Length: 102
Image 1 (tube, rainbow, N blue to C red):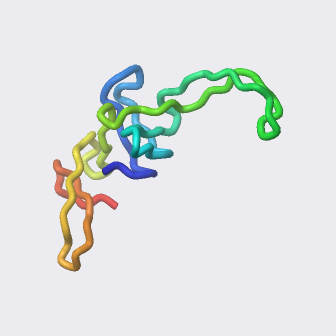
Image 2 (cartoon, one colour):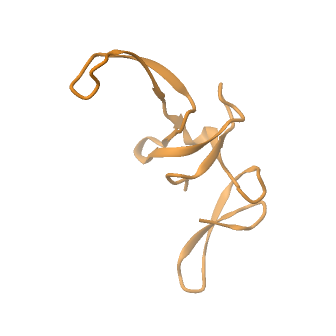
């Protein structure tokens, strides 16, 4: 139920307690990439795209079970629920403060 550009808080691992924005959702593997979190170093050969080779830092994926949505209203990591509006549209909402989330 998490989407790209949602803000999440990491609940376990070396980045526990940090928040960041979701860059990519890997749905088939139940993993996400979070901006500037879970950084790893990789050795990169020079290519046409990347003229300078060397050691680069990039985000590694996190499992969905290790993050929670960070509610902008109650400023806490929360679970999300879904409900249907009167016009039939599905919306997500914070289960703590019951506010709708975009």
